Image (cartoon, rainbow, N blue to C red; front, side, top):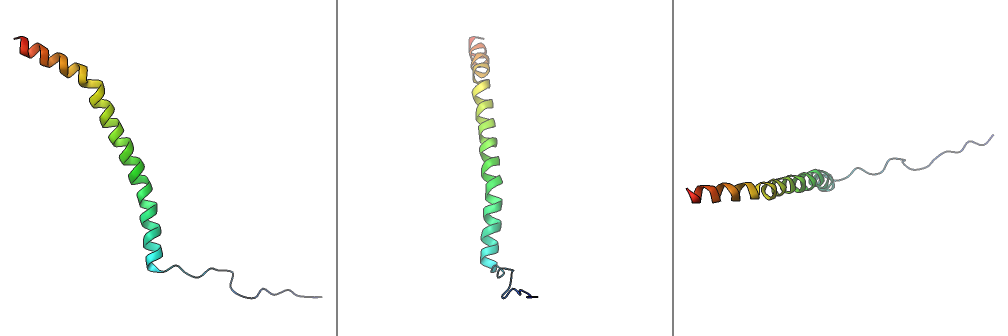
Length: 64
């Protein structure tokens, strides 16, 4: 009976602190970018949607 042995390590070498920091920075950047985009879009849509209301109020206060 032949027994096959595996030579070498099956685990990769551990990442350096710089590689870990880069990986964490990239992982943190994705939600920040996506969340920031959603937040700015919502603010912009709110300002755009309420612009006619602000114009109406301003016109009414100028007429008084």
